[in-house]
Image (cartoon, rainbow, N blue to C red; front, side, top):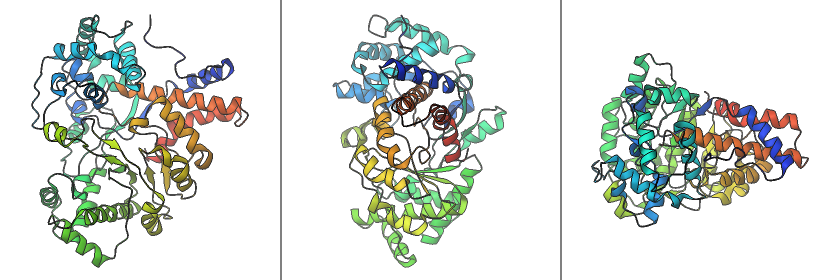
Length: 468
């Protein structure tokens, strides 16, 4: 029996379901455009086989181990390395068996849908993962991973990925992107500029990062003007490796518009580790405006990802480091927060800002009205805890009435779990097909428009928004 229902995520009533299915069939095989994510460029550069099923599916995916952790299971028992990169459990089969024994925990969660998609579509498995089938799964997946057609580049092509953007620190030398370019492979893997390590005074090692930033660029990063010039230099370097966007993961969406003298004084304070929380937040706010001004200059699309309480557990952060599932959504305000930046450059024709949120309460109240009037603003898709079927549907329902479809930017998967990419895009395509079908059957959209919009939401809008 297949793991997947062919009509999953489609409406229950037959008329709307039939139209949703027909819409989906016109977009199901369109190329994947993945403009923002966290897959490792080293995979594509070296094109080595993935080591084992556990390292492919379990240890890189915080969606998996955050659920396991919530049930009192230890991350170290699932091969998650500590802050020094050392894994307590290294036997892939042992990790996989533990994962399989607890797979029932994912019932009803989007992770279950993504995983079942990969298990069935990639590896031909048609029985449910459990303690009883753990070894069957492990042996089948391990055998496949030994074949050339399961190496990263072959999977990239099998997934029909047209372009994928990884995300790198400004301190990254981009050597893996350089290796991809020099390999002669035709897969399009580009980078994105994520300057948080040298913009956020609360980022670990901020002072050392500024020194390294200066060394890489040859700029005087002890001065405000030199620091700003270092960003211009590094942005240009990233564009050489295909970057069309920047990405900013700030705690809030606050922006500021300080005078030159005020900015110089503030930078002198925070760069020396001085000042309090208010000064650090003001510096991040000023830097969002500075990044927007640079985007006006060089045309790079600016993504703002605010509203996450990063590394909420100090204990887990100290033990395992960043990105281990303990980033928690917070209330996020945009209308007043973005006004200084928008007053400065919000009507500039060369500016494009994509706004994301973890706070669904602002979709209809703040984000849709902002994107529905400012030509520089677009709405990113439902993100993180809402990148699920229900979250995507709520996003469309709450944003479309005010912002329309054309002030949104399609879908991005934002994942480290390589095999989940086609699964996530499939969910988005099904949800959008269902939403469009509902608009048609309730008399709010003509059928020919729905077919055109299905193409827009899946492929055209994301390419246009990210200049790909």
